[in-house]
Image 1 (cartoon, rainbow, N blue to C red):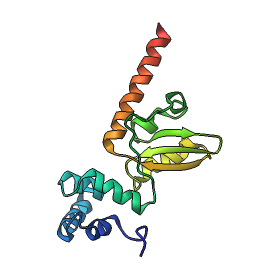
Image 2: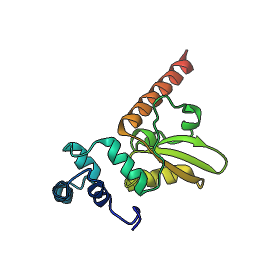
Image 3: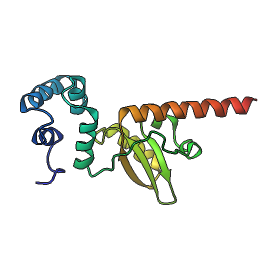
Image 4: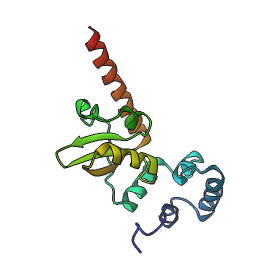
Length: 155
């Protein structure tokens, strides 16, 4: 069976990254908290973020990228609603006449994906997966860019 047909928890157990008992406990917690399974596993330190991201990347056939030091065209990013970046943690990385590539941290976050689809305005949407830390750093860089733009505007 391909990884796309298996649930993330099953894949993590198969890879021996978590135990069946940890999965069972995390699923019980998920039933009451409605948190994403990966977030629960991370919170309990039963898995590290890198292993979780690699597993999600394989399961969803989504490239895993490191945003640290990667060039981001902030002028292009400003074409998108700031809430896409600040609230939904989707960072547009590239855009051309036919498509836009966005970095996300969770391929199962339906709200973020829906917002990204709205913001793509009919362009083909390509997702890449990145860490929470990388998205956080990109958001900080975005805020700095916007702040500098506003400062320059009033100078």
